Structure formats: structure tokens, C-alpha cells
Length: 233
Ligand code: ADP
Ligand code: MG
Image (cartoon, rainbow, N blue to C red; front, side, top):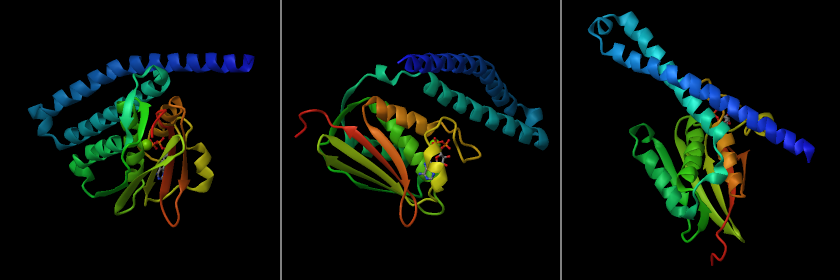
């Protein structure tokens, strides 16, 4: 029990440290991004190709840092147990999430297919659960080689619902699977490695569980189990 307390204290200190640095870095970063945007409009800058090019790199990297810090803040400081909960129709939630992707032209080549029975209800925070699905679908898209297919299936089982998200991407080397949920584990040059730890926290806060495995002959499958609302027929 003492060990558990110690771990909790440890987590709390890390959380506060992370939050402190994230806030301190975010302010100067906001100035950097603001001034690069300002400079980009400058005539002298516009007419100098080299400076424009360097400036655009500075801006992109600063934006990348900003999103990393944003995610770090979520991971380190959010108490998911404090989220406002409501009754969620899982089918609607999946459909709304897919619609978010379909609205964006950069995803027009992604093929979404579904098998979504209706009348499946869970308790949860709607925007948090959408974030969960967005993170997983982003990973699927980032793993794709060529045509990207993402299949989402729901299955009721006793007092739970299973959500399966399957892609046809490059899959995951077996020896890396145990590390996927560790904060900051990433195999991507531009990755942050916080997507899956956040997903796991969201699911576990709702007393669910999730796992990831390779799919034969190709691709990856994410499995999420979440408890149904009691009294669901
Ligand atoms: P990030 O996407 O920033 O790398 P995540 O926590 O979302 O961080 O994912 C961690 C790692 O898990 C990824 O870098 C990738 O190696 C692996 N991964 C996650 N989802 C998939 C997927 N659908 N297909 C292949 N690899 C995946
Ligand atoms: Mg990710």
C-alpha cells in the first residue's frame, strides 16, 4: 500500500512538473509563431526566397512543438475522472467521428466501412470519446501504405460493447506491441507518442480496456471494451 502511495506521489510530481514546463514553453512559443506569421507577410521577406524558406521551417517546427505540448498537457494534467458524463449512442458517435474525417479534403482517399448495430449505449464524455476514435483513426491513416481502409465494428456482449477498429496498414512489429501504450513511445519521425496513452486513460477511466494486435494477412486491429449502461435491453 505504501508503494502505491509513493507511485501516486511520484505521478503527481511528474504531472505538475510537466504542466509547469508546458505552460512556460507555450507562452514564448506563441510569440515565435505569431512573429513568424507576421514576418511571412513582410514584402522584404516575401521577395527573398531563402529567408521565406527558412521562415516556413521555423513556423512548421514551432507549430509541431505547440501540438506536442498541448498533448503533453492533456496527458500530464487531465483528471479524466472529472469529465462530465452523459449517455452516448455508440453508433452515432462512430458516425460523427467518421464525418469529421470526411469533411477534410486531405482524407478523401481514406475508405471508411462500418458494421454498427444501433441501440448500444454507454456512459462517457462525448468529446473525449470522439478524441479516442480520432486518435485511433489517425494512427490507422498514418500506418497506411497506399489505399487506406478503416473498418469499424461494434459488438454487444453481455454487459459490454466491443469496438473493433481494423486497418490495412503496415502493422506493428511483434516486439514493439508491449511498448505501444508507454508515454512518448513512437516509431514516427513526427510522432509524439502520446496518442495511445491518452486513449488508454480515456478507456480505463470508463472501466474499459483496450489492446492492439496485428491482423492477418495485413494491418492492425484495435479492440476496445466498454461497459454498457446498466439496464440496456
Ligand atoms: P504517435 O502516433 O505519435 O506515434 P501513438 O501513441 O498514437 O503515437 O502511437 C504509438 C505507436 O504505435 C506509433 O508510433 C506506431 O508505431 C504504433 N501504432 C499505433 N497505431 C498503429 C496502427 N494502426 N498501425 C501501425 N502502427 C500503429
Ligand atoms: Mg498517434
